[in-house]
Amino acid sequence: MNETPNNKGAFLNVEASATGRRWVGPSVEDDRLAEAMVQETAIPLPVCRTLVRRGVEASEAASFLAPTLRDLMPDPRSMRDMEKAAARVVAAATARERIAIFADYDVDGGTSAALLIDWLRGFNVSPTLYVPDRIDEGYGPNDEAMSALARDHDLIICVDCGTLSHGPIEAAVGADVVVLDHHLGGETLPPALAVVNPNRQDESGDLAHLCAAGVVFLALVEANRQLREAGSKTPDLMALLDLVALGTVADVAPLIGVNRAFVRQGLTVMARRQRAGLVALADVSRMDTAPSSYHLGFLLGPRVNAGGRIGKADLGARLLATTDPREAQSIAARLDDLNTERREIENQVREMAIEQAEVRGTDAPLVWAAGEGWHPGVVGIVASRLKESTNRPAIVIGLDGDEGKGSGRSVSGIDLGAAIQRCAAEGLLIKGGGHKMAAGLTVARDKIDAAMERLSELLGKQGAGDIGPADLKVDGLLMPGAATVDLIEIIEQAGPFGAGAPAPRFVFPDCTINFTKVVGANHLKVTFGDGLSARIDAIAFGAMDNAIGPMLRDHGGARFHLAGRLEINTWQGRQRPQLRLEDAAPAA
Image 1 (cartoon, rainbow, N blue to C red):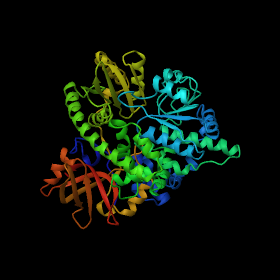
Image 2: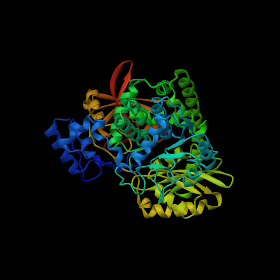
Image 3: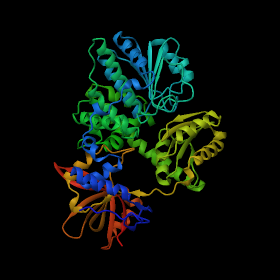
Image 4: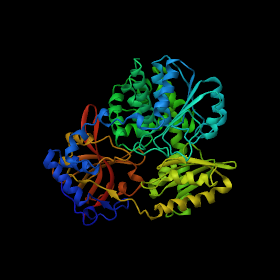
């Protein structure tokens, strides 16, 4: 059974939940549109609420629930330099020239490199893969590496980097350079043969949501088109969509437009278990169900990233590109070990960063922390944790010698990348760049305070200092008996869910707690019901570290409103609905 919430105040009058948040329900207008969509389409109301929130009209509902790449694919030539870039890659592939791929050390860089390597195999070309060391070389191309690659190669393709690399690309004497990137561009472009980037200053911004893997895929679409026009055979691109999906989700690109189709189709490809590296990674991650965007973002992505964070920088790209199952198993096992080590380092840095940030204060437009020897490979993750806990843009910096290398994460509506670029242009940073939601920087030790003060000022002008505690947005009420596997499967058709397209969150009102159990170090398993016959299981991750766990474990027979996202739990071949519990409040 579903009910329409009262929009005059907090949802179910929850002004401060167990996590201190105010619950906010759909607007009156959204409720009206959802009810009308039910009448017109016969789609269940919880699904209609999700579609309305995504801006889908009733006439578009059916096609939205069944997205196709054909319908959502943009024309690659809508991006500047695309034809020139693809033509150079085609010429190098067909002539079997010496090609080098310079890739960033994160998942987006690794999947972008693997896409090109896989495609070039169709021409019996084995490119050189170069991934810079995060600590020794830092982000992006550098003069020494580019000069050395240019001496031995005819073409260098920079993926997920290069847009701001004027000097290093100029140093690539004797080789053509093509940049396939998505990071925010500056006022001038580097002296490359082609710079394909939807976030160039002279682009429309229509494709600004693409990650680098998406840009590379569109470049290969254009390359295949040019090959077909020349009467040549073309490599299969659909088989590459598993890589595009992984890069898109792991880089937290918004799941809108073609990104949604990339991930939807890519998950289907991944489920076939045909890529040796992803099969090995799924196995070592103990994935026992069909892949979802959750698996990409929280199981596979962090392991691919682990090599670039604290291990050998090219491990992730090599894993994704290999066709040898034994090599894949070996690399996957190494990445799994590195990911465990990364978590331990992260926990140590996080505790110190949170303590420092709290002393400094978390009400300013920017929350930041800096520490001696903090590993550059985990500062981005810790910045994300700070951002989540304070609802403020956050920067975490690891100090080493006279410099600090930092990473930042932003909140919706605040462009951190632009602010960091501004500080770099003003000379307060040695270098810096990124995009709206994530950015990196290098700063002189004696300029950290001044740089952070200026960044805080710039972010304050964008309104970062006026942001209150994050409300918990919910999509409506649902009773335990209505949460069926069939309903969840229909809801999932409105996905995939992730950045820019959050999964719907429902409130189960006035529920009794039938069973609780602490699992692992700090998680809580719960069974709850409506007090009659319907019951549903829930899992609340990290609940014992906040007020949710103790409140529900020691419930004393009280009743609660429970909020979270529905998912299907598969165990020994059986499917059951499960709530990923995110918040709770006593029922009045």
